[in-house]
Image 1 (cartoon, rainbow, N blue to C red):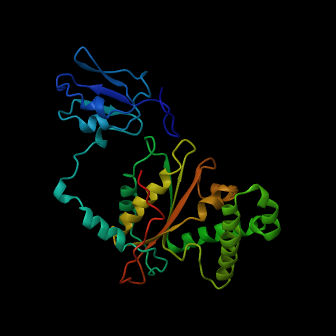
Image 2: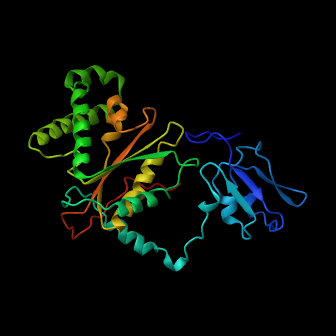
Image 3: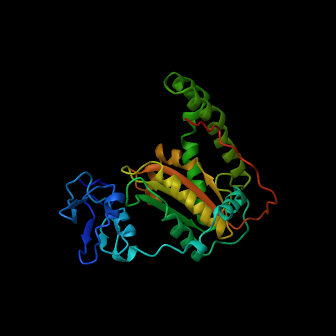
Length: 303
């Protein structure tokens, strides 16, 4: 029973080289699609068991003799590579140093981000975990300050045309049918935010995408876990920090595109059926931060 995604509806193929196989059973242990089983001292494959091969590649990745190969669902023979040696990987302190250094950057230098760094960000983002492989995350990349500004203006025009939804009379009519928190967000944040964006635009200032030279919008198919684009975007943001770029997540774009925006989706090649995601702006920081800020989780509860 193959698990469908927007890209694949069939199982991946698992092949076993029995001359190499030592029957250590590690492949069975890590296989969560569960088509692998032991019979008469041999590892067997039955795609009708449970979910069949979902293409995670764990069995091939764990095999100590290279006896297993997996192909399909966006996995190819060239997809597998050796894990980097431990001494080349960041330890906890190095990772923490990167993460606490990162700030949300909204002031950028007047220069574009090189294509090589864009490619590196996307390569890092592609390593993000996902609900069910293969990844259904799609990325809209908008390069250059002028194109980002065009995207921002298009979004603002869409917001302006739907501003009536967040007016006081409309919100009062919706109030009995929506949660208190939703009402407060629309009344206290979204409505005044649109007004602010419009006011700043009249001053030739972009307060939606902040005049960034690069923007990416991460979104996902209806089949995927709705968390997938946010995880992928986070990987992209950390990669940008490691490359000397500043970044900032923009959360207002996904909901705006979800509620209408048909013309916008067509113009920018966005699948109209996709779930809303999140945007990130990138660029070389124009301001240098000298201190970090200790943040805290809302609550940690042990059971």
